[in-house]
Image 1 (cartoon, rainbow, N blue to C red):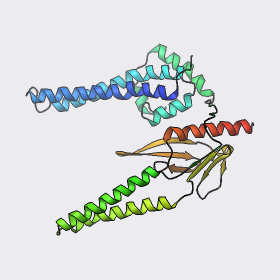
Image 2 (cartoon, rainbow, N blue to C red):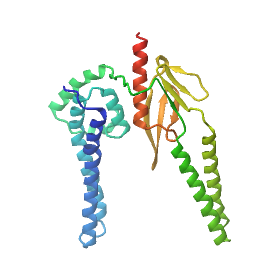
Image 3 (tube, rainbow, N blue to C red):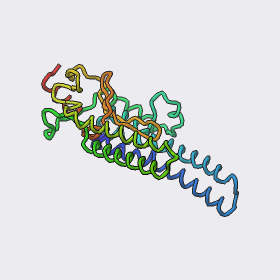
Image 4 (cartoon, one colour):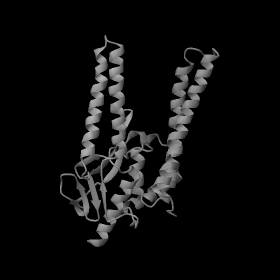
Length: 272
């Protein structure tokens, strides 16, 4: 096992095989259905049949590629716990207890390899220090977010007043200025708040208006994305805390790296 593939590289390859290829098969199937319908061959039910066929083809592709990807990824990535967690979060694979795992197409050789690779999950993930990371990082509200909220406020108020004046019968247009005022309020509130929302350093994590939690008291710390219908939110989570980071001046990957680096430094300074 070379273990020279990063978690992100493995996830990128997984997305191609487990998301993009199945999606392409589904779109191609729909395309064939629309074509047959347009030339009046099997018209009426061609699109419905193509949808069913596309779903079956995409699921068959996932079932075939998923085991192949697991074997390759878990063989070549060192931090298999992080890889598996992120693969589940990004919907490349399912939880161990999921029924969908029973649809995987796996041969005897792959079964033996996966069984052998289970030993890697008995070891902790390994992270290293990063000298580019300062002793402490303070995270504030994002100025970019404030500008966007300000622009939205101007647009909503201007649009609402314009439509109200040009359409005197529609008081409902005044909903738009109300949304704009709220956007202004949110922007102004963030602008006045000059204090850091999160402080992370070699000793632990501190949220605004709370005391610092030492690394030896921090558990299940992670950065993850949670979908809400068509929208998604990035969160920092640890212990019982769950903080949205979308309005903060920190990127997903950078925050994740900070958690790893500062914990490594703490453990080096406080060996158990």
